[in-house]
Length: 83
Image (cartoon, rainbow, N blue to C red; front, top):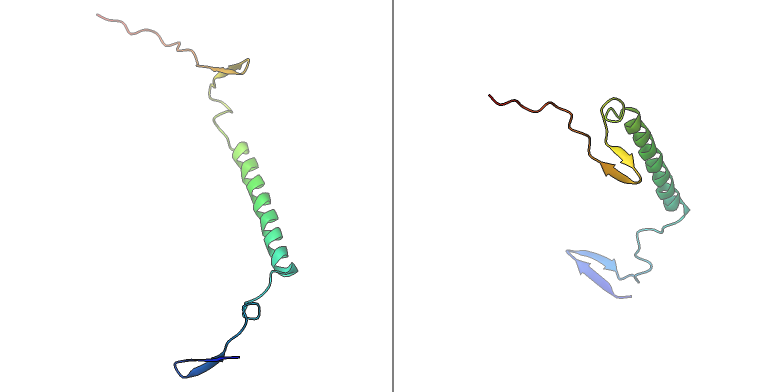
């Protein structure tokens, strides 16, 4: 092996497969999988909460759905009178 000197420190030259920081084993995969499941559960909880507090569909008039097409709500206000 060839020695390299960096500022007075001599470090041996290592092959690329020996210089790795670590491996992706069961531990890393487990953390990623559990994190993904937790994100999905939180997302579902937020969706249910959003539907529970949805005030737009509770009391406000909505557009009517007829045969897959949206129709605009009718404008039933009285016409303005001119003098």
